[in-house]
Amino acid sequence: MKRIVALLVALGLVCGMTLGFAQAAEAKTIIKMAGMKPEGEPETIGMHLFGKYLAELSNGKYEVQVFPNSQLGKEDAYIAATRKGIIQMCATGTQTSALHPAMAMLETPMLFDDLDHARRAMEGKTFDLINEGFTEKSGLRTMNAFPLGFRHFYTKKPIVTVEDVKGLRMRVPNIPLYTNFAKECGISGQPMPFAEVPGALDQGVIDGGDSPLADIVSLKMYEITPQITLTGHILVIHSLYINDKFYQSLPAEDKKWFDEAAKRSADDVWVMVKEGDEKAKATILANKGSINTPSKEFHDYMAEAGKRSWKLFYDTVPNCQAILDSAASYRESK
Image 1 (tube, one colour):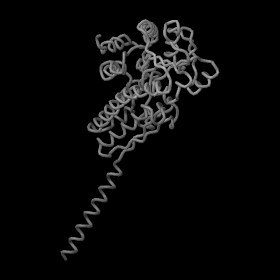
Image 2 (image 1 turned 180 degrees about the vertical axis):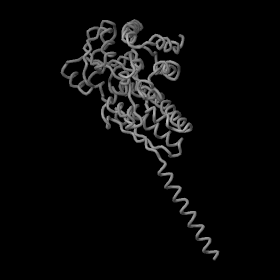
Image 3 (image 1 turned 120 degrees about the horizontal axis):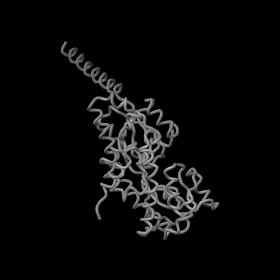
Image 4 (image 1 turned 90 degrees about the vertical axis):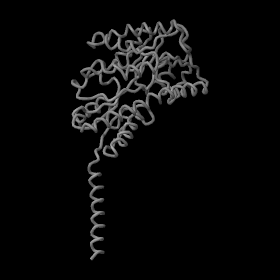
């Protein structure tokens, strides 16, 4: 009789454990997150890191499925899908300015001195001011901000003086902010998809372009345009976004997990990009490319061109001046 009772108890324990595992499996929530960059890029790495941290914090309650490289459509398509709740999250940059013009100010020309300056602003009030009213308009909540890198010039001939840049035929993204800034610099901006750049350089259609150092290295642009000028004129900043209705439906503790995962993943990307820039410079030099640091005169010229390009924001963003003043307040005195 005792053996029978013991057996029944054991069976009960096994069934209880099996039921517990089944319930845990059923309780797991899948989070789908879309992005535009391929694997290995800071955006995609940030997406994976968010998933890793969320799984750890929630003890496996949430599983993030990452769809990079526009697998779920182009940016406008997957942003729309996130707004509708078809997917829960996405990663993108200033494409969200179509919903809220202030989001374009994440990439304000000549706004930040370096990555440390930008990080202080993005982790401070500047980021809050840019996002003011965004969730109400879009139905999306901005979870963090992280860099893809500063854009620098790559050209066939060296850029030393202000006169060297004037009249250059440079590829620019087909975005008003970028084309306007190029014009203010005296550059002949040539809007074209990035994929067409190598061919355009070979054919002499353009003299160069601008990209973060990571892109210059990954695509070996230094082989065609060996002159890299560290202008750092625009910092490309992306963010993770979440459908706000989904976020608001989460229990209070779960919201904290999502917030903390977003913070940790952004922290990692800031560090990674800073370290990656130094490695990229070493790679360029090792492959007979040249890295040029602009003179103070050239930097001042670029800074004034940047300020003139801000007119676009004054015309479209009601709290533009507050955002600019806030960003300036995080600059270290020298």
